[in-house]
Length: 264
Image (cartoon, rainbow, N blue to C red; front, side, top):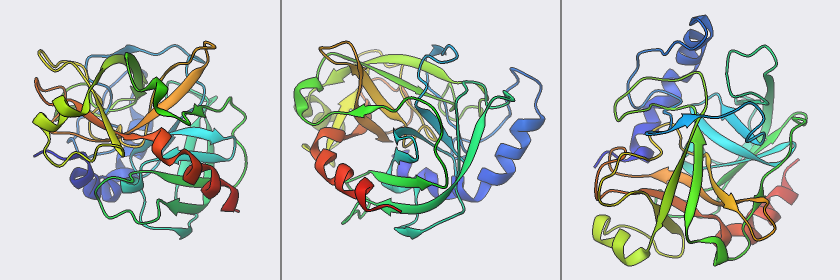
């Protein structure tokens, strides 16, 4: 299995070099890389517009995230190395193009990895920032009413399995896949902690390695964006019969809220 959690370990080691290299690329250029380098982007996506998803954040260790608060990023547990003081992460926000001079970059001060995380389920974490990023935040789901229909995913990662690192954000739409169907694809799925989305029959659209930690979201009944998932793992990228697996945010909403209150 090409598991996004397993591939992430080497992404941390290459992140600083890879992101530095991106800054040297001409606008719109892609840097050759491996699927475990930072910023695997959305497969089958289209370019996101500036300001379309203003709460999207790029993390220097090679993951995505969303602004839970202006100074707190919600990401995946497998993107961080435990809990505690941490000034080694840089969050970049406010842009779709990582080379845009308007990009805002802020250092971390503290990390909270989901209590009890052991590599299976519970794949969420919070990163406290040294100062706010002045962008709108993304509301999280507090119940499972939104776990259906179509979702939006976005990120800066590879546009094909094993593909190239990207500088500009892509977006895509993926449909909900029920637990029973997803269990047929992944026996290790943890229902209630994980949910699935993707085009089961034909594949072709998916999140991918390095999109880890980024949000999966949809409009709620009031027409506001609502985060229902966190990019977690999957076998390959956009393969038929192998949907993406996402942390089920509503299951952990109370824990996320409590954890954010403890930071700083």
